[in-house]
Amino acid sequence: MKKIVIIGANSFQNPLILKAKEMGYETHVFAWQDGSIGERTADYFYPISIVEKDEILEKCREIQPDAVVTIASDLANITVQYVASRLGLPSNSDENILISTNKYAMRQTFMDNGVASPKFAKVSEETDLAEATAQMTYPVIVKPTDRSGSRGITKVNQFDEIPAAVKAAIENSFEKCAIIEEFIDGEEYSCECVSYAGEHHVLAVTKKYTTGYPHFIETGHMEPAPISKELRDKVAAEIPKALDALQIQNGASHSEFKITDEGEVRIIEIGSRMGGDCIGSHLVHLSTGYDFVKMVIQTALGEEPTLIPEHGPKYAGIRFIFNKEDLKVYEDVQKNQPQLIEYVSEIEEVGEHEVVDSSTRFGYFIIVSDSEQEVKEILER
Image (cartoon, rainbow, N blue to C red; front, side, top):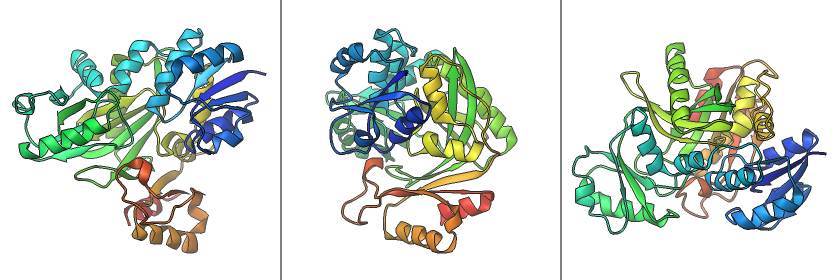
C-alpha cells in the first residue's frame, strides 16, 4: 500500500485525507493537536506543527512516503515542498515556493517577467512610508507579505490611513513586513488550475464575493463565474503565463485576479496550491465534474492527472455566515430549497465574536443547481 503524507488536519484538509483513503492509500497526517477532524480520519496522526519542517522531514524518513501533499494552505505548502524535495519526491522548486508564498517576491517576479502588475512597495516598521508611497496613486491595498485568508488586508484612500494599515498588516505577517500596492478596480475572480510536467490545465473560473472596503473578506464564491466566453478565453490565455513566471510545474494553483471595466485581466496573486474556502475541494468537482482533489494526489505521486469529468456541468456556490442575516438566508434555503444544499459546516453561535478575517467566520453552506440564477440569487441575497 502506498503511503501519503498530508500536512494539516483541519476541516479544509479533511477532503484530501478522505480522498487518499478512498484511492486506497495509507494516510499519515501532521498537524498541531487541537481536536481537528483529521486527527480522527487519518490512518496515522502525528502531533507535530505544520511549521516544524525538519521534525516532519525526520519522521518522514522513517515513514518513507510515496507523496507529500496539502491543499488550501500557503503555510502547509511551504512544508510540503521542503519535505518532498528532500525526499526526492515530485514537487515544485524551492524558488517556486518562495515566490508563490511571499507577495512581494511574487510582484517582483511578475514585473521581471512582463506580467501586468500594479506599482508596489515592501515596507517594515523602519520604512519611511511617505517615501515608499510617493509615486503611488490612491487608493492602495496594504497587506502582509506572507499570509492568506484575508488577514491584515486594508484598502487605504489617503496617506494618513497608511500607518495604521501597515501596522495591522505587519502584526499579521510572519516576517513582519507588509506590501503596499495600487488598487486594481474591477470584479474579483479566481482561476483553478492543475499542472503536470509544466503543462497547465484550466479547470474552473470562480467569482468571488467579498465584504468590500476596507478588508475584503470573502463572503462567498460561485462556479462557473458568470462571464462571457471571450473573457473566459482571455483568462485561459493569461493565467498560464503567470504560472510559468512563478515556475509552477506540478500540482494545483489558485490564481486571484480582477477583470477591469475595459475587459483586462489583472492578476492579484497566485498560490501554488488549491484554493481555500472549499473552492478546490468542493466547488470545482460540483460545477465541472473534475475530481480536483484526486488530481492533486496524482501529481504529488508523479502521475498524470485524470482530466475526465465525472458528471456534466452544473452551478455551485458557497456562502459564509457572518451575521444573523446570513443565518436567516441559510435557514430559508434549508426550509424552501433543501434539494440545493450539498454540504453544511458546523455553525458556531452567531455573534459571539467579530469577523475580522476568513478564519473567524461562523460557518458556511454549499449549494449546487442546474440553474445559474438560483445560485446567484442565494449568494447575492
